[in-house]
Length: 260
Image (cartoon, rainbow, N blue to C red):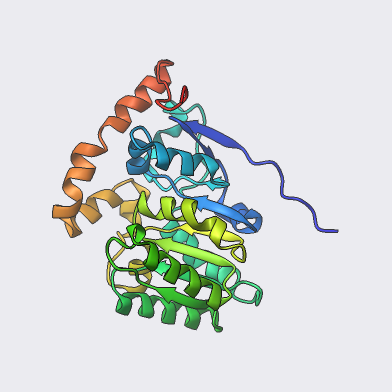
């Protein structure tokens, strides 16, 4: 008889609980449900965007996608987060972990262009030595607001017979799309929000060197790649996180949605 996974340890970071889990344990225990990977930008948005917050609260797994949060966790959040588990690392590792598991079939929704998405599919299938990615689609800008387009996507996912859906269209769009449409996809057992992962896999966008990620400077590398898009996010919008973390440390942080 198969054994159930052990109870998960969780750590409160502002207004969500993050799973304090190793990547190996996550690969073994993630068998169904919704996986989100919060980073600093997400945590700031979760203070202002109630639908985004509700999607996060209903997710089954939430893993730390920030080396900075992991590094400061013992001081601000009472215990050390075991691992930084970014979607851009976890998704290709998930594909490798299940490369011999013929029951796993994945649909990718995301990628900056159809060509990039196709390249990512080609690389993942080559690595798995089978057609682990059974369908993929790079949606047009604003697709989430177009009901006809959404129904087209849902039909494609169903036709692919995928039981895993990886959505990489940026936050909070990807998390809200999963939240709004998971009920329309009864054949899908695992949902993942994976951000820029598809572009990373295709090689159209480069990951930071490992040493920069290790010391918490991946954001600086990405800022150098896309300064116009990321400067305001990293240098202005995300700065309140550190004040909010300090307030939690001092015991006077309050969840803006707790009374709603």
